[in-house]
Amino acid sequence: MTKAAKLTRNETLVLDALRQGTGPLTAYQILDMLRPEGIKAPLQIYRALRALSGRHLVHRLESQNAFVACSHGHHEGHRHTVIFLVCHACQTVREAVDPGIDRAVARLAEAEGFAAADAAMEIRGLCPQCQAAGVRQTDETVAPAD
Ligand SMILES: [Zn+2]
Ligand SMILES: [Zn+2]
Image (cartoon, rainbow, N blue to C red):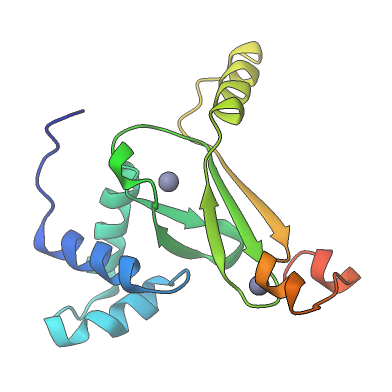
């Protein structure tokens, strides 16, 4: 997909909001950011998020019901297994990609006769900064959120 269709105004606004954000944003946080732009309805946000997700420009962080801009945007249209590194202490989320995991996921799906559309993985723990600051991994850190 070299010639991608142009984004709508709302899609561009939502994508920019996510790129400016320091972490994952929920649809309502995005809505709050975009009210000055005249966006008032959650549906406008959801519609834009769905379109952007479909183009792999935005990923959904299931555990937080929030969204992040793909940090590998130059691969627009290219499906990759999304790997999120989620820090429990400072809440930062980093996105990683690994071609080996992409291949493993594709192989696994094929072996199961499954037509995979996309895949995501969340690795929870402590980021390098928090480890350096002496934050300890606790049972609570390892347990699923909420
Ligand atoms: Zn991505
Ligand atoms: Zn951290």
